[in-house]
Image 1 (cartoon, rainbow, N blue to C red):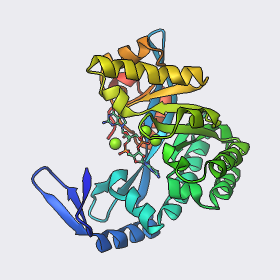
Image 2 (image 1 turned 90 degrees about the vertical axis):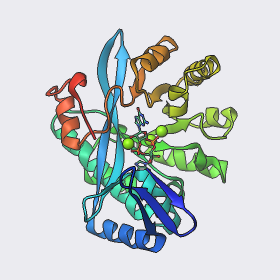
Image 3 (image 1 turned 60 degrees about the vertical axis):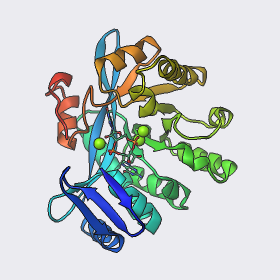
Amino acid sequence: VSKSSGKNCYTFAKSPEQQLEIPKIVMINRLKRAIISNAFHLSYQPQIVVEAGRCQIFGAEALIRWTDEDGHTYMPDDFIALAEETGMINALGQWVINEACQAIREFMALGIAVPISINVSVTQFKSDDLVGTVKQAVKENRIDPQLLYMELTENIFVEDEKKTLTAIKALKELGIKIVLDDFGKGYSSLGLISQMPFDLIKVDKCFTQGIGLEKEKKLAAMIISIGEVLNLQTIVEGVETREQVDFHGQNGGRIYQGYYFSKPLEKTEFMDLCLGKWSLENMAGE
Ligand code: C2E
Ligand code: MG
Ligand code: MG
Ligand code: MG
């Protein structure tokens, strides 16, 4: 977990005792080098469909990690904001798109046809070459575009709603699916969201993890029913306990992603899971 401390430093908790303060300029240079030397990888967190008490794999979310020269692994919250701020997010985002498409090709070669979701940040979404990059990656890897899901957050609506809709439509014309991530956490209106051609919505963690109180329970249930009204599939994120799964299940939840089922996995672990070499009970992950 990291926090940006003050203006020009990044603070990393290497361990609870040891806080590491790194000047921003140093982080920028490290990130630059990491992009050149390709120090990133994607972890795959399984998404699980629960039906009549049985679990099946729905797909996975690809989550970026960066391992630096001394073996320290940075999580996205440590560097995505910096990448956005410096414009490096475009190079990074392109890498993610290509990497995910390659993974889908590898999965397809093994007979595994599960959707893989990637996260796209606002800056990347607004850049001119996003559609071109996706088109190229899909073509080069000869993958079924329907297996590529793109997760967007409500922030994409901050500026020009019309332009955003046009961009989403252009992406959908490529055949990929569009997901609204962190639903309920942002501030865009329900009216606006209902007009957007999303294929799926992901209920934000805060509605899962806050179901301790009566009010929160009702809110969490409402969020899922909004998905139903919009006729969209819903993924409930951040389920950590059996109680949370049961609660959402009673309120129409069907697809889940969270530590209760599995932490993000290495690509080969996720493959093995899909191939039935593992079962959900003995998955470990990060
Ligand atoms: P997100 O897209 O909402 O992804 C879900 C985050 O919740 C992931 O954190 C995942 O590891 C974490 N998570 C999943 N299940 C649980 C759970 O049961 N409990 C808890 N406490 N957490 C859970 P991660 O990997 O650290 O990623 C954080 C955020 O960074 C992501 O949130 C996403 O917004 C962003 N991100 C990740 N990969 C990329 C990427 O390739 N590109 C961009 N632009 N952003 C990315
Ligand atoms: Mg996401
Ligand atoms: Mg999310
Ligand atoms: Mg994580």
